[in-house]
Length: 162
Image 1 (cartoon, rainbow, N blue to C red):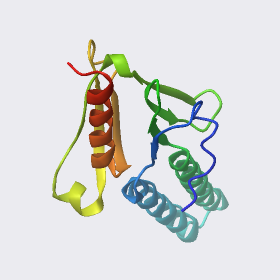
Image 2: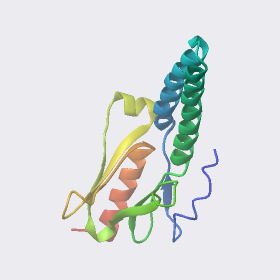
Image 3: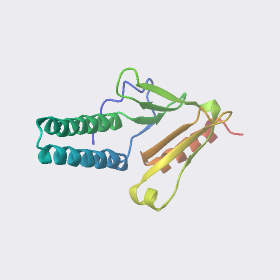
Image 4: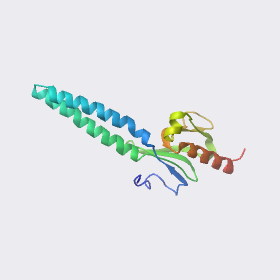
């Protein structure tokens, strides 16, 4: 599946790029179905023209929200390069950006295990900062997140042995 153009986020050639799993799309779909059902029920059961417009307004907001959520999730990129481990996220110009941790500041990379994670191959990955918890990376629903944590730890041990 094409994940879109990630060259906007990756300044250097990245060794490995990880995207969000299909599990990350479940919440927007459920929210769309609920909001869409409410919008249709309100618009079809209303006798007043204003309530009909309110129902269609709710349906319109649900459609815009699901489009935004899907587009935002498609542009989410978790990767590492020669400088460190990075996360690119955001869709709107004032919300988009890259954040991460440089290799020299990484403590370790971990992932959460469990039956649901194993079954869906969707993991929560944490890249800890050596000096402060406020600068760590914590991302959920990463496809192959277990491999991402293993590769990051392996590279960390090769480049910065204790």
